[in-house]
Length: 421
Image 1 (spheres, rainbow, N blue to C red):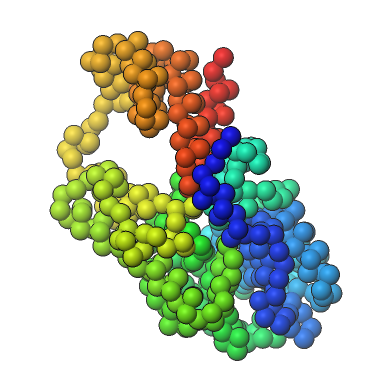
Image 2 (image 1 turned 30 degrees about the vertical axis):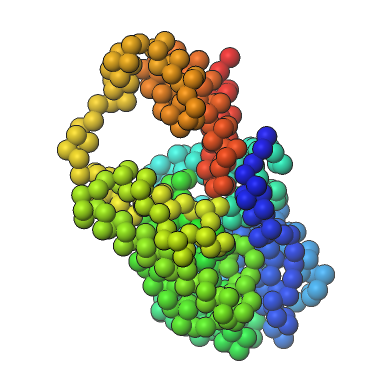
């Protein structure tokens, strides 16, 4: 099947390569969804983030061992997302490195957290396109390559042994002076790592070459947009000359870094300010998601294209995170159950045959899906409606520049095809 050419080209942000950032400092990009960085000291190594799987970590370790035999003495988790913490046991090589994390560290792969974990796992699988064919269906992840090792996914985590509780701590990483700084953004437990002698900033997921994932469709608690923007201000004041993000290629040059971080901050603040203004004016989240757009000076920036996050999702997330689920319309305080609403609408439209005919003839795949959903909810013309929805999902996917949306559409199409004779 076809894919949006811009999404295909976005794969240039994560070529598989193990490269020098500076003498004795290496970057591993394209081996997994997230990047790994290694700092070499006189007698040992420090590893910043460890990927999503033991398979990916082993591939990176092989590249590292072609350059040095020094042991890994320290591991830093920039934050607790599973794609950054799941290969630690591989880098430890049976030893006992110091493992550093924020005292706010909390991961869904550590312990039994209760709640809707099955729903989260199912939606995560769809978002990242597990089970989709590569190449063809899964183009990339928006933040990393579509084709990478998944053996040992989530299996190599090691618990932190040192908790960073202060706002900023000076530490020795493999014998090099570094600052470990609390920097909430994509998660509240983010640490960034600053090497002042080299002016290298390891920023975790507070920046990557795509619109920020202010809301993940797999499901996530509210990500504090204002705190994320404030962190970007802090990163700008540091004036880094090398920016080493958790995803996509490192950036070299103070001016290039400043431009990208400024645009990222301004985009997040625009979501906050424009959405708040719209809500204060009595607009609903649905209306604002449909109407608001980034201002022109930001909309065309390559690092703000919607390969991973999406502007409209961010608008909805800000509204839900600050005001909750209710949109202010009293009708929505007690909406009819989906099946009952569907039956009434279908009857009003002249019956299931008429709705199905409209869905099959619809030029707009979104409208076709919405009509099909009503038939499915009402248990009316279900098999035909499923076929309509599968076709519409695949049409949407082919036109989609956002990798997570494409993966989700195609994953759901596959699931529905299993229900359709």
